[in-house]
Image (cartoon, rainbow, N blue to C red; front, top):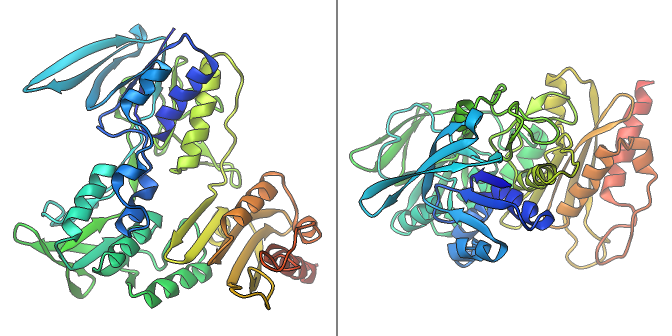
Length: 449
């Protein structure tokens, strides 16, 4: 049996590795347009800030490493034609000065084409010094440019925008972050929690401009200024962290059904074409809270989808569950994470909710190094937990994971408030901040009845 996978990112390589894990005989070919594979795009900002020494350190495997698993990786190649009724595709690569075209047949095709950076239609995006941040090659270019200049503007205050902004600040640049919405991290945090992160960033020396879109990038051959609202700001470089768009051209060519944004798949990661699967940033998934289609451009999602597709391709039975989009990030010394729905998003979707909050410490108050921690739990009026947000300088990730499990298993606020947690002065409070937030939510719910 032959399986061809288009895309060498986390989703595509997870699919390939797991197919090989369960079947030693399937012929596997991965085709990717990139020269680097098996690297972590999420780590690019941490190379910029110096926490990771160099970009080579975030590359976990080279194409030749997969030969040991009998997986053929074709790099710097582009699939340009899929004939799904014949189970064939064509791709090309440049051999010196010549374009070489090849044809492959397949029994199963996996589309893992990911997404591309979205660049808004404004003047000046063609100038030297304007960068997207999506691939390791983008990281190389940004670092080289930043080492020569002084003023940077990062457009977009999502996770990658903020992490990149801090990385550039650590390189010694003056950095301005601009966001067209009235808060930073709008997808994951409510305004009150986002303001805590914003305050930390400003204390660290970054300038944040909210509620105004970038209108134009100005310069001769390279960036010199940006126009944001009524302000004209000096800029030597501009990072367009303005979101992504799924790459669905090949899926359309293959006859796969497309949803609102991306490729439609079932719980097996199977498209509308029976022997074609799709995984990663190019697909739509179900939101566990709203039941609606959504996007989940997270590495954890991509890997889980790859495992699911692989099992089904080799004849096992596996289902990809609706997503809660659990995330965590670290900027400087501050960690913040979220899972499930924000209060704002729930209200927009017609879900009546209340929130429970706590401001506590990460360990016993008398123990040296105790840090402030903010917890916000969102629950419906019948007490079902549907979201959580946490900010602190330590111990955020494991608490977000705890809340991810609680939400997935339909734990109520009252159940969480009476749950048993561990305690030792160097690592926790006798009453965990999560329990304090759940108790606050229960108190608010009691006042509604």
